[in-house]
Length: 189
Image (tube, rainbow, N blue to C red; front, side):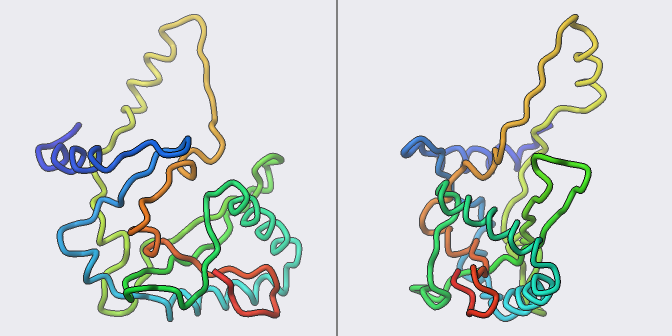
């Protein structure tokens, strides 16, 4: 169900959508004034990444899987490499990440999870700075009833669906994350 405030948010979001080079490009749905005041959380994100590196040094197989996944993201154009000090106007945000591992899966055992709720003490997180918008997926009970109403049903799982949506250039600095391909080097992006 979409409320009155949600309709305005969706309308603004719809205006930001463009189709460029085979992908949809959108702007983040910023709450008024939050983009300009969101504090850079580089210190917290860096500490979380250092903890991740310690874990990788103990579990080299996990590191190799993550390295392959990040490498695929780069090849597919989902992420781009940049230097840690390349923020042009000082505005930006770093998103810590971790691995969700499903040992019962064979095709997509590892999924990278980004944590947009992390922030410096006393400051907002990226999640708090963005509108969440309305719930757009249908009620699961109604969906199950419709599913049983037909003799044939189709399901699909589109790989990396949300990762196929590009962020507009001004918002990309707010979705940075630390990574390195060599555990003995400094993070490269």
